[in-house]
Length: 165
Ligand SMILES: O=c1ccn([C@H]2C[C@H](O)[C@@H](COP(=O)(O)OP(=O)(O)OP(=O)(O)O)O2)c(=O)[nH]1
Ligand SMILES: [Mg+2]
Image: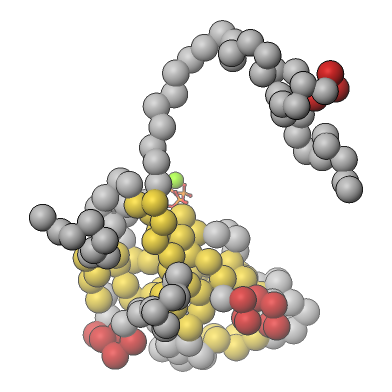
């Protein structure tokens, strides 16, 4: 039996031998994500607004339906250079066994050149709970209005219903 605090072990396949020297890793003991690199043969210039799917050369099979992967932008690239993700966030299913792909979007006003094996985005493993949907005609009493009656409950109010300040 694995120790309860043991880190989940994820099966990783290298789809390109060049990745062997660039395996994703946690940069510090407290890092939440592992950086993913661009598998490119040559520099790739993205014009303003251009979005390209970039290979990582890695396949990670999470296998456990209680876990998922997230691909998130790196803050430096996103904030300083406007290099973010075309899908904003990538969600990796536990049963996905294909290559991790990064949708790279240059949302800036200037060209940006990606270098081969540059760290482009980060991969975060998160817990997931799958739900069962149970059809009902109505929710439990007292929970459907918005808070105009001052019930202290949210009810159906949303999208700024509680005001700005
Ligand atoms: O940034 C991403 C997002 C997704 N994926 C892979 C893993 C994921 O499990 C699969 C499907 O992703 P998603 O369900 O978000 O895409 P979809 O457009 O709904 O495609 P599908 O019909 O294959 O589910 O694509 C990536 O490699 N990178
Ligand atoms: Mg899908």
